[in-house]
Image (tube, rainbow, N blue to C red):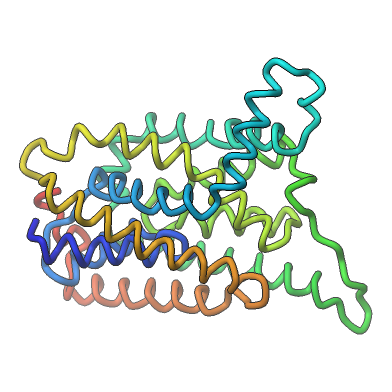
Amino acid sequence: MSWFESFILGLVQGLTEFLPISSSAHLRLTAAFAGWHDPGAAFTAITQIGTEAAVLIYFRKDIARIISAWFRSLKDKSMRSDHDAQMGWLVIVGSIPIGVLGVTFKDQIEGPFRDLRLIATTLIVMGIVLGIADRLAARDEAGGRHRVVRERKTLKELGVKDGLIFGFCQAMALIPGVSRSGATISGGLLMGYTREAAARYSFLLAIPAVLASGVFELKDAGEGGHVSWGPTIFATIIAFVVGYAVIAWFMKFITTKSFMPFVIYRILLGILLFILVGTDVLSPHAGESAG
C-alpha cells in the first residue's frame, strides 16, 4: 500500500465511519474503483481505532462520568440506580452480540462478506430500513391533522432489553454495507428513541467493540505483506482528524435534519454497484487478490 492510498483510505474512513453509509463498504469500493487491492478487514479495523479515538475525545465528559459512576457502583449499592452507572452496564450488555458474532463469523467477515454484490444489497436494504425509521420518527415529531405529537424515548428510558436490541443491530454492521451507525440508529428510531439518543448510544456502544476489534487485528497488520505499519498508522491519524470533524457536524445535523439524503445516497450507490457488476465493468471480487 502506498502513502497516497493510505491517505485516501484514511480520509474515506474518517468521512464515512459516523455517517449511516458504511465505512467498510466505502473502503472496499474505493479500492475496487481505483484498481487497488482490497485494504482488508484488518486495515479497516485498525483505522477505526482512529475514528474511535475521536469519539473518546468528543464524548470525553460523558465517558468519564459513566466510567466513574460505574466503578463506584461496584462498591456502593446506592449508586446502582444512578443513570450513568446503568449506562456503563448497558454499554457492556450491548457489546456482547457483536463480540460473540464477530468471533463466530470472522472467516466470513474477511472473505465472502466482502463480495460487491452483497455490499450492493446491504446498501439498498439498510437504506430502505433507515428511510422507514426516519419517516416514523418524523411523523412522531411533527404530528399531524389527526395525530398528536408523540414524545420519543431518551437514554434515561434505556433498559437491558433495548440495549441488547441495539447490540444486535450493531452486530449487523459486521457485514460491509450495513453501517454501524446506520443499523443502530435505525434500530433506535424503530424502538421509539429520539434521533439524538439513538446516535449518542450508537457512538458510545461502538467504543468497546471497535477498540477490541482493532487491537485484535493489530497482529495482522504486518503479516503476509498485506498491510504495512507506516501507511496503516498514517491512515489511522487521518481518520482521527477527519472523524472528529464529522462527529461534531453530524450531532448538530441530526437535531434538525432528516436522514433522507443518506437513504437516497445508499440506494443509488447500491443500484450503481449492481449495474457495474452486472455489466462486467467491475468484478464482484475486484481487488481481493491481496488484503
